[in-house]
Length: 338
Ligand code: NAP
Ligand code: GDD
Image 1 (cartoon, rainbow, N blue to C red):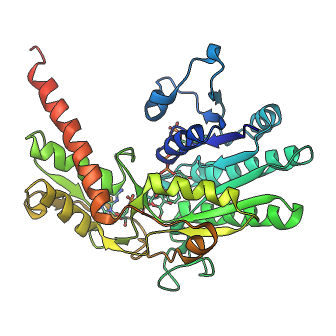
Image 2: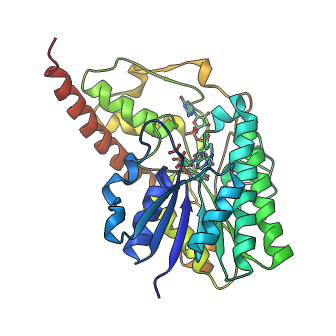
């Protein structure tokens, strides 16, 4: 039997990799896409299929804040699995847009759970909630696992804590298959360009090609547990295939500073980061999460999941990819007629 999945946030980094993975596994995939005046489907254009040719990937307009339309959609397509990845996902931006962040993340998750509860009366649907290591905030223990208390430090993290607890609440109250993946930072060549790793690899490529002089960053001493997004979407899928709903940390078990990442990326391009990186306080946050380090042993034991790509490989994949983009940009620039 072909399985049917709905992905919110399909145009994002994780949504695009998850869609690829589910298509490979033979799923019928549905994706929720926000209408905008320009296309936002760049990350999934390569897997898009014409609607007239019985496609395995179908996109639907919708917004997580519009619960009615979301319920209508879920009742219409009757997914076996829903992956709720949609969010205003930038921590710094959440300080500027706290209410909108809560609407997309908190109310958004509740809208997904309510839609699933309605469908669940007819058939079982499994829900994955994209929870975050950011919820640990000013950490209460090192490393962090599924029993570490949350101590959020941003509007983003507070909203994610709300969504986490509602997911557990729906599991307990209605017996639904609703699970949280508590994912530590995961990056890729598809990472949004304002997150720090991609900001660094994009800038390093451009600097190498002589198209940029400086890179302005904020706190270089923050430590993160960084993995590769492709590994993490496999973990999301495994969480929903598990015999029972539960909450799982997905992480590498290794932490490095922002400075370490920058140093490595510039080194890979035979440059010294200290010659190019400058600190701009505008990138500091009103409250900072200093140290994230995950303990993924539960996921390893129960799901057989491990993060297979290490920090050095991740930096290499992203650096090489973004150097190629910079080369193309530099080449295109040379031929711009004046
Ligand atoms: P991302 O690249 O920023 O993608 C976010 C997705 O959410 C995009 O498809 C975006 O659509 C969509 N979206 C935003 N607001 C929406 C709304 N109101 N209604 C419907 N869709 C909306 O994020 P990501 O890195 O793939 O992360 C996926 C999820 O995992 C997010 O919930 C994030 O908070 C969470 N998470 C990420 C990490 C990480 O390290 N990447 C770690 C832990 C948890 P547009 O393309 O139209 O903007
Ligand atoms: N974005 C950004 N830009 N961050 C910077 C900069 C900069 O110029 N300079 C230093 N940093 C530091 C931030 O202060 C933070 O400590 C660290 O780099 C990582 O920042 P981000 O890459 O923006 O990610 P994040 O850790 O805040 O949030 C990401 O990971 C969470 C999981 O822990 C996002 O993907 C969240 O959606 C996710 O939940």
